[in-house]
Image 1 (cartoon, rainbow over the protein chains, first blue to last red):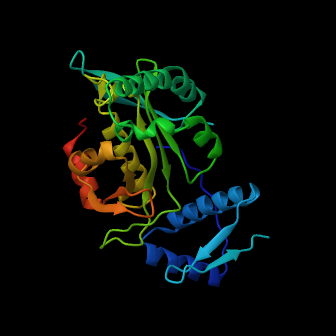
Image 2: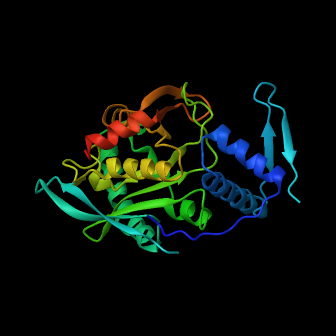
Image 3: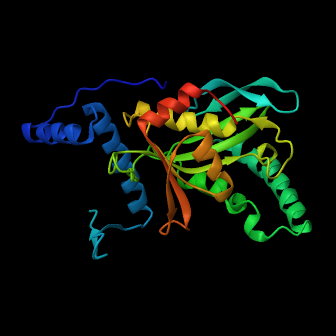
Length: 70
Length: 211
């Protein structure tokens, strides 16, 4: 097991609600959701930095929408 | 890069005795050196034997095109795509790269849930019965799958894992690992997609390490 460090996270009510909803929906603890968010954020940043583009695709129409990372 | 090394055992098929080995939670220059200096020459020899024996190209190991150096360098430092390696007798015996962020479950009953996806997994050529008879070390694949399950549990994904299998490994994932076979995936080179539920993960762990 890799050693972990503890931090305090300050969130607004709205952010905390969003976090609670994600925890409920994904059956994960707050820590697990935040860690997953960090992994995804780092991954996307890394790919965009390399020049890749991020798209959402509608499964039925196959229509693609580029997510602009500013 | 800090690597955690955990003690494990592999079965040496020549002596039929367990041998101490290590599970590394990363792929380092040591592994890439072993891949280039030990795996590739052995793999080329095996492919040459198959070719000379008149075995059709489609039956040659598909992983012969995998470039672990390129894969590892592309994922360096990425939290979402950790690598693992097994070292025994000073040599890398297996490597694996996981994806913990970009895939979701496909199996009814857990569809859409988070999953640890096994992106790449490869055994050293001398441990593969189809290339080297008898295989030298047994247990590499099972220990890698257990490591993927352990990570899935650590991330609170409850042991759920998934993978696309190369044809030579279909029976291992279906029978040894007890994963659900969702059939050939037209969107992924027609490879069979296998997925493990929390119950299947628990049963596999309880069964212990096998080949």
